[in-house]
Image (cartoon, rainbow, N blue to C red; front, side):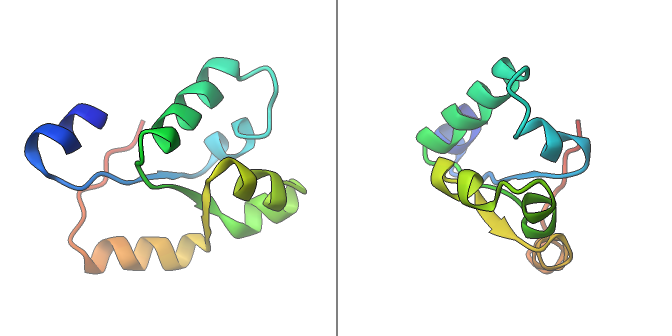
Length: 89
């Protein structure tokens, strides 16, 4: 993802949703979380849902990691209006 942005000028954004949101708070997900943190450190916007962060009691922790907190409904509408291509893993 970092290479695409740098080489082509195409903006890339990561929105963590679904089961992956819980993985953000799971200490056993070291590789996943290290990858997310490296994307943030590289300057890519990485977001997740405020409601899930709150339900996990992780809003402050996620924000301190640099995750952008946004309601999923708002993120999906924004991405649709922007004509974003969504890639799901």
